Image (cartoon, rainbow, N blue to C red; front, side):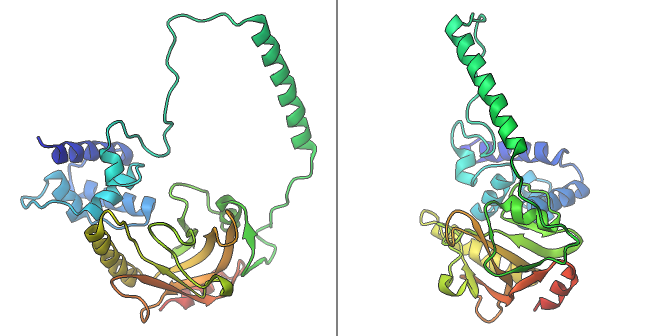
Amino acid sequence: MNQQDYHISRLREAMEEKAGRQMRTPKDFDFLSESIFETLHQKVSATTLKRLWGYLAESSAPRISTLDILAQYVGYTDWDHFCQPEARPSDEQQSEPAESAAPKRKSPMKWIALSLIAIAAVVLLFVFFNKPQPVEKPKDDKYVLTIGEYFKTPEEYLRLFGIKPQFPIWGLPLPHHPNVYAWGPKYRHPKWHNEGDSAKMLPTITEYYWNKDKPEASRRRNIDHYYYYLRLNEIRIAFVKNLVDTGYVFTGVYRMSEELSDTTKTVWERVADEVDFDHLDYLENLRN
C-alpha cells in the first residue's frame, strides 16, 4: 500500500466514525453525502464517495479539491493537513496531559496560591453576575436588521435567527428557510479572497479560491464552485469579518450574479439592505 492509499484508508475510517455508520449500502453513501453538505455546505456526490470506497467497479483517483472537502469534514484544514504526520483535527486539543507515575504532594506555598486563586474567582463571579448584562433583541420585537450593524462574535448575530452555532460557523442555514444562509465571510481572506468596495459596504463580494501551491486544484475548485452555486440559487445574509476590525458587520442580503460570475470567480450582489425578522419569507422572492 502506497502513502496515498494509506491516507485514503485513514480518511474513510475517520469519515465513517464521524457519520456514525459504515459505508455498506447505497443508502449509507446517500446519508454521508447529505451529512457532508449539512456540515460544510459543500456537495460531494454519493457516486464519488462510492468510488472512494471501491463500492463501484470503476476506479479513478479523487480530485485534490474533493479530498480537501472530505478532510475538512473530519475536522482538518485540508488534505495536506490530514496527511501530515501527527496531524490532529483543528478543533481537537493539541496536547493532552501525561499521567504521572505517582501523585505529587503539593507544597504549602502551592496550597496558599490555590486558595488565593479560589478567592479571586469567587470575587470575579460575584462581580460578573451582579453587573448589568446586555439585553438580547426579542424575536417578537419587530426588529429590522440594517446595513452597518456591528456584532463582536458570530453567536451574537446567529441568535437573532434562532441558530445554534456549530462548525463550520461561516455559513449556517436559517431554520425553515432552505438555501437561505447566515454567511460570515472574512474580508480579503488569504484563500477565498471575498473582495469588494469597502467604502460602499460591499455592493458586491467577489469570491474565488486560490492556493499558490495548488494552482490546478484551485482552478478546478473555482469551476466546481461556480456551477454548484449556479444550480443552488441561494440567498446569503452577509456578516463580514475584518471589514472594520475583527468583528462582523452586516452588509446586506446577497445572491449570485449570473452576469458577473464565471468559472474563475463567483460574484455575490447585494439585493436588499435590511432583514425584517417578522417577514423572513420575503427573502425567497430575491432569488434569480
